[in-house]
Image: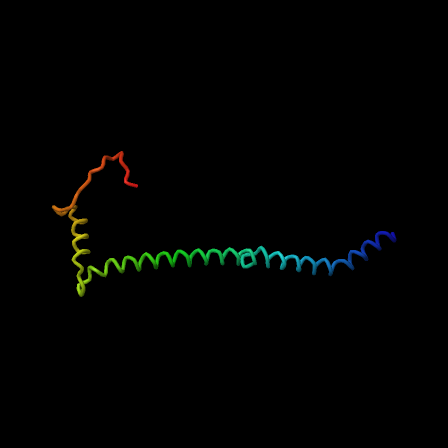
Length: 109
């Protein structure tokens, strides 16, 4: 009988520390592995870096197109740009240009 009482007494003494240990482990796990934990934060920062790189690439491409399209604005019409676009749209060539026809097997690059 004394062994059963001793086990119950020790179990009662260990109940509060066990609960606090479980709570501490729960919050510790969620601090590192949870939806808003350290691992998720690192993934979000990596995603943010990738988005910034993509944004900068898109901005550079847009700036390049703005420079190219600026020659077609009504306030300043660049004859070379207009000629280039007209030939591309009409699929025409200037009589002074040299045209080299390639077969489908020949690759330029």
